[in-house]
Length: 187
Image 1 (tube, rainbow, N blue to C red):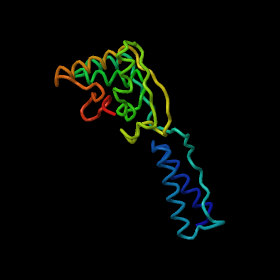
Image 2: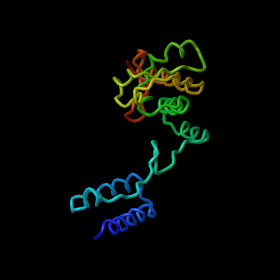
Image 3: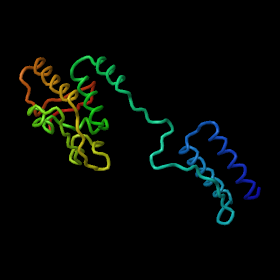
Image 4: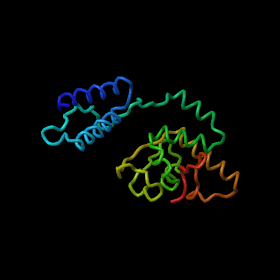
């Protein structure tokens, strides 16, 4: 088989994969595997296959990102079984935080502004949060999001709820949990 015949066959196979909805990443991996196979079987140097690679942008997703609508967030809040679950939904939504970063936020980080009665609270995201959750502060990028009055009210209700359940709460160590994931807790 000539190099051009092999290229035509392999390229048409890869094009079929694309037509059938395989991800671009999967097609590129398959292409590299096939090139390696042909290289191991005599298609080296000048005979090595030259195939068309699928373009992958830096942030490639096969499925488009979905951002819930405010009405859907309200349904999630209403469906919360307790103030802790409601608070975490509002906190993540209003702060625009990633899951792991939200879990690394501690009440001590926002305590001063919440207890001062501010309606909008600054949530410092720092690389030191990796000590709490290794996936927090992705790329060690530090930034300063804010949460609004609904999230602040949710956190206050969570604190009251926890005090009602377990008595006096050291507010520096208070945690919000949804199943197993803590959001606001100790530092």
